[in-house]
Structure formats: C-alpha cells, structure tokens
Length: 331
Ligand code: DP6
Image (cartoon, rainbow, N blue to C red; front, top):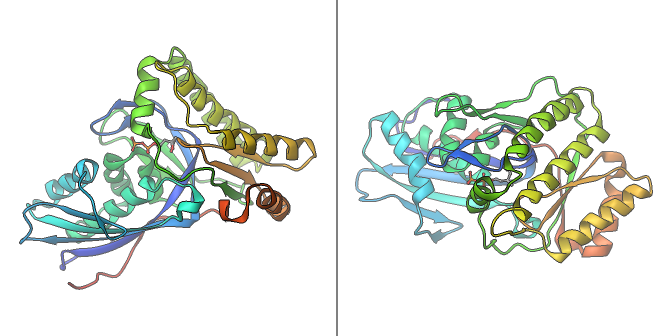
C-alpha cells in the first residue's frame, strides 16, 4: 500500500457471512473474542468509504449514505488508533456509502469498519499490512477483521491487541459455492449483536460448552474446505449457526433473532433437502436466512424461493474479494 500525501483515501470492502460464528468478547474495548471464527467474503455487497483528515476540523464527522451520524464511539476507536500510529491530531470527515441493498438483509458493519480501516490508515499516510488493517478494523467491529480478506477467512482469536487478527485461508479446494440471501426483515434489530453476544456470554449456562463446540466445528469445517466436501461444509455451518442461536434462547433474559419467516425458510430448506436437493442455511444476528448451495442447484433453489417469498426478498452472492484501496482523490 502506498502512502498518502493528500490526507485523503478511499477504500472498498465487502461484507462477509460467518460459517463458524463469533459470539462473545473477552475484552469489549479492543474486541478480543472468546473463540475463532470462519467466514466467506461475498461479492455483491460492499461499503465504499472516503476519509479526509483536515486540520480545520474540531471533531470527527461521519456521513453514512449522505446522512450525518451522531454516534461515533466505534468509529473513534479506529480513528484514534490511526492518529496514534501516525502521530497526528487531525480529525477526519468520513463519507461512507453502503452498497448493501436493504433488500439483501445483510448487516453492513463488517464491510463498513474494514473500509474505514483501509481508508483512514492510507489517508493518514500509514503503510499497513493486511494483517495490521485486520487488527485496526477489529477495533470497530469484530466481524470487520475478516472483511479485509477475500473468500474464506479465519479470525485467529488471540488474547491481546497484537495477536487477534484474521488470515486468508489457504489450501481451500471447495470453490463452487453460492449464497442465496432471503430477506425476512431489514429493520434494525432491537438487540445489537454486541449486546446479544455479551448477554449470552454472561448468562447462558451453555456458554462454556459453546467454546468447546466452536473448537470442534473449526476443525471439521477446515477439513470440509480442504477436501471439497460440500455436504460436510453445509452440515457444520448449519449446526454451528443453530448452536449460536441456542445461546440467545438460553440467555437471561432469553431472546431470539428469529421471526416467523425465518422458520418458514428453514422449513423450505429442509423440504428441498428431503427431496434430494443439496442446500443448507446459516443465520447471523437477525431474522434473515442465507442459503448455502452450489452452481448445479442454484437456479432451481432460487426459483423456488422467489415463488415462495417474492423476488424482492431474494438475492444471490458468490465468494468476493478483499479490501481495495482506490487511487487517492484530491480534495
Ligand atoms: C452473528 O461483528 O457485528 O454475525 O464486534 O460487537 O461489532 P461487534 O459484533 P459483530 O458480530 C457479528 C456476529 C455474527 C457472527 C459473525 O459474524 O461471526
């Protein structure tokens, strides 16, 4: 990555879907997770962010899709670290646009904080490696640490600021994969993932077993990815998602991200599978379902879901690229 003499840089980062979920932080201030996680970066949904450091500013300013934002807590964690690394006291204007259609029902925090990390570091003249960018993005949102890289990515949990970062997975032979997003509800959720995961970690009696489960699921998913075993890949991903949601149900007070439509999609996938059509599902901290399938069955399953839920709720994605830092744009 080149250094910036301009104080300005733009970055594009894509969102990701977790297959082995991150759900709980040992350290909330610097986002150190209890467990590792594995995700797939997707091609269709991304955030484009321009950061400009300006000596005239008296505070950071954030625009998301053209609207001024007032809660800059997580953004400031990233920018303060950038300022510290660059030895700068300048504040920044952040202009961020999400190309994550609300109809796709994806959270944008992973792509947003990955793009912010790339753009702000470059705008401050820092020349960071992808590993360093991953640590920087992690300060904003845990899942963002993985969106620095493309395709399959593992977040190594570590136990301090320096050893908790994501890495691209090598030796993956499973490349034929498609994700069909079924949007049930794109309203923002009442319990954020940050709140939900801490409630689960603090109150679910199953939380310590979750850590053992993830350790096993990580080994098995890696095996599936390395041996091109789609059935094993789907089974492990689906089970891990449901085990994460079991933590929400077993928290005090109990809660769930599922809505009636979520269960309808689950039933549909189970019925398709009973008919011999190979597909699985995963669900993040919301009601929307992501169906995991392969090219051979993609149109059949997509058509079926379009018939049942309507075309505006369905979108298709494939493995996507890592972060892109664009040519510096002059002020
Ligand atoms: C269910 O990364 O949004 O999507 O670190 O508090 O910002 P914070 O949480 P976030 O949580 C993601 C939760 C998840 C699982 C995952 O992406 O691994």
